[in-house]
Length: 224
Image: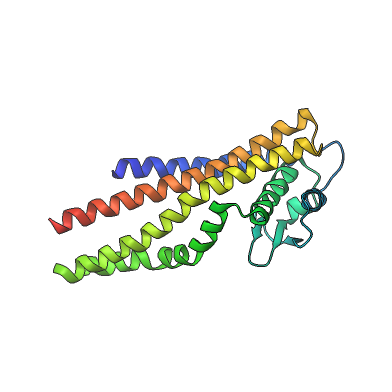
């Protein structure tokens, strides 16, 4: 189990390195029409009949996200103002999330519900497990079990995230092609950027599941 967990962490490190390298590569390739990420996001929203979502610039690198609470699509400066193929792919992906929200895409709604639960779980899980280790008998087992339940909630969030991200990327590619934002020889770069980003979510989910299984194994041995 520990060996598998190490492999999962290695996959996670590879995924992070891969997404950075792929993004940097296609951040140097400019789209022929000269659209910026913010322009593409705005036009895609309007073409989808969505006029109540604002597009804003946010600080940081690859900090792009869609906030369904405020209906705000936030693009990092490297995406918001860039005309690169990578920027358009990411902008389209985040627009895909806004469209998911607009059409009532069920996995996105479920993920939104899980956000506070996942945040609480990620903060409380390991402290509860460590406290439980300090105690013997039923008290210690209860604390560990409670910690595992909290951690399981966080793991569930990572699993729910997968279909949400895959669907947003699929929508992004379709929009980029159907609305002619990228040429046929440019769309491949956008696909590679989004596939690299998707791998980070897959790796995170695998790591989370492996950590949960290890906690369950520890708890099982303690209960015997």
